[in-house]
Amino acid sequence: MKKKLFVFCIVLGLFAALIIWTVWGNTALELNTYTVTSEKIPFAFDGYRIAQVSDLHNAEMGTQNEALLTLLEETKPDLIALTGDLIDSYDTDLEISFSFVKKAMEIAPCYYVTGNHEARLPENVLMAFEKQLSQIGVIILRDEAVLLEKEGARISLVGIDDPGYASKYGGGIGASEIKLLTEEDSFTVLLSHRPEHFQKYVAAEVDLVLSGHAHGGQFRLPFLGGLYAPNQGLFPQYDAGMYTEGKTRMIVSRGIGNSIIPIRFNNRPELILVELCCEKELP
Image (tube, rainbow, N blue to C red; front, side):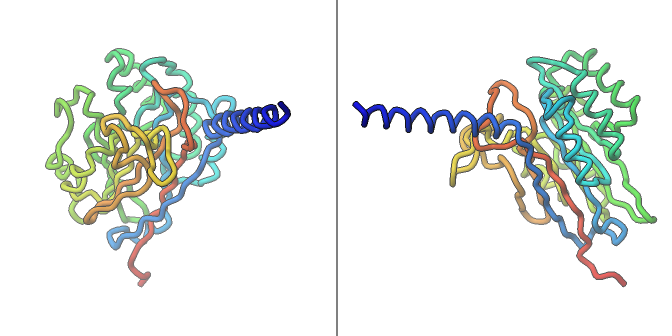
């Protein structure tokens, strides 16, 4: 009897520890930093820092996202990339997302592209939300590019709409259209919510892609990676981290919040910091 009770207590303790660890893992923000080196990066942009926030889904990391904003400020970014799904279309609360972005704008300029959850919103709701963002200075990139300038040098920042949004390309911009938005001699950073279109970005010869959407595979298994990602299915190819093919590198964020599946496993919410590094030696 005592042996059975002992085994029961061990099993109960392990189960309780698993629950506590899982709950902690859904709220304990993690910062991951990547250094991207290229001879196309001008000397003026050496050390330029881009913070990426993806898939917020109305989540709050701390009261009014205080934990997320504190960590974001500590990265000392030159630019904040918002790569889609700021809101959750199944439980829409625009105020949480807007409040976060408003405070993020006090840290660094924010550039935003839509995700599939924004694409699902009624057009009038999305237009009202984006009007709010524009009024506080957020740059919304809709299948368009801007030049970032520093000390007379420049790099190109391209942002494309989620394919679900009824953009002028009706169902998603192609590689040839992306390439038309880039400058041949300029280092190009592409903001695109969906990582499963990596081959399209490679064909467009983009230098760096910042993406999200996969939620890290939601449940991450040891040695196997993510279990499932939308539009990729089981054991997704592009779930988290950096991928390289040819001249193109893509960084996929695990994101911050959850959506239909309300919990993550072995998959902490993630803030990404990218630091650009010039490959050439200073003259």
